[in-house]
Structures are given as structure tokens and as C-alpha cells.
Length: 461
Image 1 (cartoon, rainbow, N blue to C red):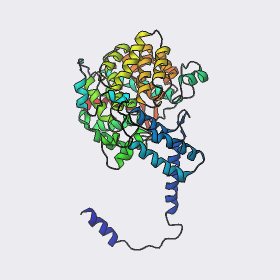
Image 2 (cartoon, rainbow, N blue to C red):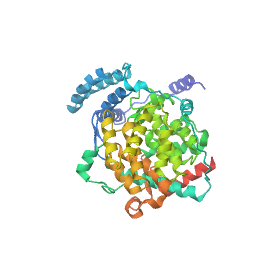
Image 3 (cartoon, one colour):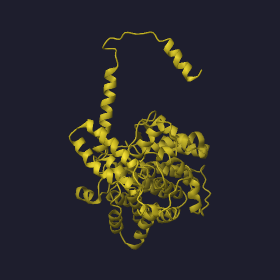
Image 4 (tube, rainbow, N blue to C red):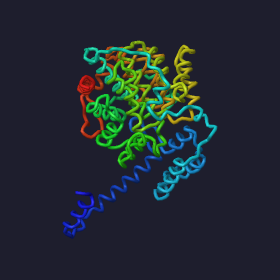
């Protein structure tokens, strides 16, 4: 039957019903309206769930659009009205102000001489392939015990590092130092509840079904089925997907956060299922990233995927960093950031000076943007130099989006050095084997079973 025939059949067979006041559904509709009001307030004034860092994510949208070379002067003028409206709880005005602000940034004019436009924009994986050279060809045995052990180490490294970072994300080096001194371990009782890992699990679900032939659409359909909601770039992407807008437009359309960290924070899973196959890891990362990001945001996921893939076949962390930086397109702005961080590492004896320079140079970028976090990763990996404890201290002290950064590089170090590099009593025992998520059908997982699932998927495809 055609859609109109089904609808007509429903209407013709519907018998009138007289409802009592109790049976009517207006109360549930009123709750939906209240939920929408609460979501709007959160855009303007919220606190990060894991660390309580203050956040005004819609102002970050204006910031990000300017970072991408567009004139946001009109939006800048609107921001103060929005702050006043939310602080005074004028929800009627806040809806109008928010719509006006989003319209302004979605239609912002290009600033022709903005530094962003000096660099090439990467829209497709084919463009990326033309700009880099994959010279390494490793033969890694995915049927080996080594693969099982390294993959378990990967998940343990990611989960304990994410638990460390969740408590301190969103703060600066200065404020972290004032509060904690030097961080050498968990600053509170850790837990595994974290929104970042959900996207890796969705990728793995799609990969399980399609293997290396998985498409961005396959991944995006797992997103809408498994993930109830997101934040910043992922929130926009999920809304686009639910309107039937598939990748790559789901990651680009009306998405001011498309170069933030959301893709970069999930890159290692693509390296885990393509161990030693650097090019394939990059390709999988590109497919995954365009669901929610574009250009430099996509390159961020490629960068972490490449490092994770290298970690299975290369033990030296500095070699991994150097080779991965070299696989970023030289004419991309992303390359300019990670290359700057790497060059500074080679010039100084300790991490503090390179990070201070990067932190100042990148101060116009939001703490959730890919750039300051990519620089933080490079510096922590370089000076940590394979020492899990030292790497975690540095990445914690750098601040920014600490849980995302720590989880990604914690994975890379753990794969390269083995789970033995992680002090079991200090880091693993407080976590146990449980992974808690807010995903549909995956609310509670065993870390060991997750590792086994990753290995099984990789071998079967």
C-alpha cells in the first residue's frame, strides 16, 4: 500500500472516542515543552557533567565560526542579550535571541584575509590521499595472542585515562595547578560513565556488520539507533540524521562545531581494528568522522586513528608521533598545529614551555576545539615517552578537554607498551571490569568482553 492509502485506511476506520480529563494527553505534552526549555537554557549556561566546569556552548558556536574564517560581529553583539535573558530566566526572549544568533552565524560572511583561508580545505578522503604518502607496510598478525593482549590493553588504557580526565575537563593549567598541585592519579573515586566512548561503540557495531566496507551511512544509522543524544557537533549531527540528512552533510550542515574535538576523541577505535594497516585506519576514521565533522575536525580523527594503528607495530612513542604528524596534509591548518607542537617539543627539555606557548597561541579556540587538544596530545606523548604515569600527569596538567585527550593517548601508550605499563592497583582495580554507558542496549558492558568483541570483529571481517 502507498502511504496515502495507509493513512486513509486509518482515518476511515477510526471511531470517535470521548476522553475524560484524566485520559487526555496534554500533561505529557507540557512535559515535552518543559524539557525543550531546559535544553535551551543548557545551551546558554551549563556545567560539564563530569567536572562541573562552566560552559556556554552556544557562545562556543560563535567562537568556532570565527575560527573558521567568518565574520561573527553581528552574532557577537547578540551574545550579551542571550546571556542576560538566560540569567534573568526570560525564556520567551531567549528562544527569539537564540534563533537570531544561529541565523547570524549560519549566514555569516567569509573574511577573505582570515588566516583560516590560507590553508586547503579537505572535503573528501581522495583529496587527503593525494596529499600524503603511506610508506609503511606492516604485516601484523591479527590472529596472534599479541593482538588480543594489545587490544585489551587499549580498552583498559582508554577507560582508566578517561576516568582520570573526566573529573578535571574544562579547566586551564593554571586553575588545575592551583587546585591540585601536580596530578599523579585519580583526583576522586573514578567511574567509567563517559559520553565519549559511545561513538566508538556505535562504530564497532557498524564495523561488526560490514567490516572494512562499512560506510558513513552505516555508522550514522547506528548512531540514531543507539545514542539518545549528544552535545555540540554530535548533537547537531544527530538532529540532521533524524531529519534524513546523511553524511557528509550531517556533519557539515548548520554545524558550527564541525572542527571541535568530537571526531578526534574517537579515532583510536579505527586504529584498533586496523592494526599496522595505517592507510586503512585513516580511511575508517574519515568515514566515521564525517558523520559529525568536517575538514580539520575530520583530520583530528584520522590523526588519532593513525597513531593507534602504529602503536600495534611500533613501540617508540616519539616515532609514532613523528610518523603520524607527517601523515597530516602539509597544506592543512591541522598540520600547522601538530607540527608546531612537535617542533617545540624538540626545542625544549620539559613539557611546560611548549605547552605554555601552544596554550597562548591557541587562546582564541574553545577548550573543546580540536587544535589545543591535538597540541596537548603531541606534547604529552612526546615527554611521557612511553611512561603511562608521566603521560597521564602531563595530559592532566595541560587541561582543556582532558578526558578525551587522556583516553586517546592512554590507548596509544597502552597498546605500544602493553597493559603492564599501567599500575593495576592504582589505575585498574578502582575501575574493575564494568563499563557504564547511556546507550540503548549497551547500558552495562564488561571491559574484557568489549575487548573480546573488538578482536572477534576484526578477525571475522
